[in-house]
Amino acid sequence: MPAVIRTADVSDLDSLVAIEKRAFAGDRISRRSFRKFLDRQTAETLIAHEDGAAVGYCMVLFRRGSGVARLYSIAVVAGGGGVGRALLSQAEDMAYDRGRMLMRLEVREDNERAIRLYEKNGYRRFGREPDYYHDGEAALRYEKLLRGEVPVRTAVPYVEQSVEFTCGPCCLMMAMAHFLPDFTPSETMEIRLWRHATTVFMLSGPGGCEPFGLAVTAADRGLSAEIVVSHVGALFLQSVRSAEKRRVMEITQADFRDQAERHGIPVDYRAFTVDDIRGAVAGGRLVIVLISEFLNFGKKTPHWVLVVGDEAGHFVVHDPWVETEHGESRVDAAAIPIPHQVFYRMARFGGMRAAVILGRRT
Image (cartoon, rainbow, N blue to C red; front, side):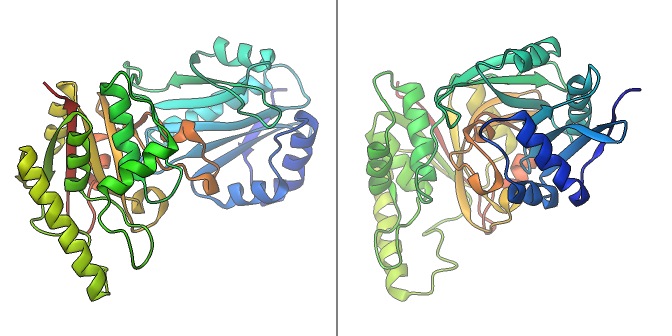
């Protein structure tokens, strides 16, 4: 009889832990982590039984607003042939039903059996992550297109932010690495660009960046820049209670606006549209876009991401923030396909829309 596969719940916790211990010598999911994943809306775990015994499981993670599902883990410890293939197939169906266009995964480079399973089932290798596992073994990255006919492609390198306030500078570093052949991203450069572009330096800790500071910094580093912003005047002041901090932010931003004018950076005071972003990308440019993290992570905080492509009704986005508390790694945040209208709903903060369009200087 074929294995019976169903969605796992808390009653399966002991079985999942037992499978994990039998299947993996290291890099195991802990009992506590299994419990968190079972309770999380952005994770789904399937468990397979044969003759009443649990013989395998797989776990899929779903980032909100993304067109990607991630096969986080799959393990088979007993049973007849085809359990792994059946789990993988049902995981793909589940991802498809949630509107995902891609399934992505990482696999140990020395796990020949798993690699054969993925390749026989239509997965394409597209990357390698050295020193990915605790013992130093590399991971191979695979993906499979679940819907549509155009695979996601981008030549823009991905940079993960190392601190919580440098999303804008990391987007800028990705663009610089793409357009400037001699540029190499680094944590030192991340902080240097932040110091150049930030809105405020003092009083209550590090500040973030606004579009004029990012555009001026990009122009100073050799890129062309354009700004599209729906608000005139100082930005991000709505939650600032300190009069002194407001004054410093207003002075800093006024200086950035003056610098942008001296650089001759075009500024369009209006809400950008989906077609604006599509047109910029079609012209070979990249777009730093302000979003709210609420849709992705339930946090009402501003955040900058980089639009690097436009494929099959989806924007391809590099998000410099990796939510490690949700089990994410760099592979979850790089080259994320997001449907145009979903992205447009994300692309605002406090009623404001802002984008910085970057390209090669001619």
